Image (cartoon, rainbow, N blue to C red; front, side, top):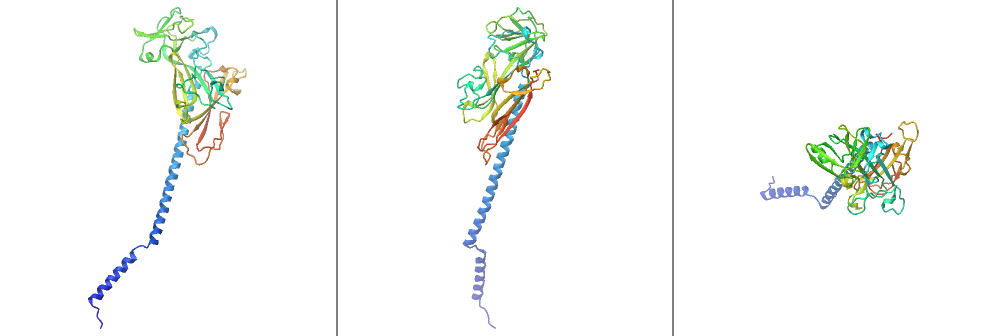
Length: 376
């Protein structure tokens, strides 16, 4: 019998271990294949992430467009519904209403119609001049200068005027020959009435509109002066008892503008308010509002059914007091380029066509018909 010495046995074990080690390793080709497969998987995961992120950004932007459109329409609807509100004085006319504000054509004078529209009418070589609206925009509402945001081209302007109740009544000086009136002194009223405010006093049988020239507090009362410095007379035109109501007249101008008038800033819905001393306070309400258009439904028949027979542009309205509804259209856009495909759609904005824009922004049109509650 042939025997195996110890050295041969060790060589066999070493050779077997070496062979097993060689079998457990990877060749260069195998390594390259493994790297390629890993890169493919990584690219697929990256592409999935980018696609998911893009979809998320798109959905988030569209949700913001929806939210912005609803907020902007609600701001407009609240004031348009109340246009011309004057409490129980709404049905008064002629000599029953005394307008003491001087001059009577001052922008702060109360407009009993409560609404005035301005349609953008320029079609070529448009620069944003106030004369490009029909009728021309009042320079009192849009004074020149870098400190005032101007309306952008292509969008309408609407001015709303209405009374805002102060929830208070006269508490002295019912004699019209007195140049002052008194109301109860509360913290809310003290901060709500100031020199330059346009106020209305009414007892439902008569009313007077005047500009406040000075206010003072004492003995639980606020004294409101209406001197001839800003009024045609020191005196009211009617006598009022202590049940007469005091209301503050509000003027609000809605338009589309850009913050600091810079073209790089997104368009937004702005509201400009006539504050005391005829100063203008401007507020940015909702950004991303690109276009605002309005048309006005006028009741032209004699039945008094309060149903609009025709929708007209502002310059064609025959009687603003018979404007029963306002058709409001808004075009809202995303603030970023979120769509891979160009926007080739056209949009209906209250009967006006807008687009196509051929950019990568997503847009949505919002249209609503709002009833003016105080018109007849």
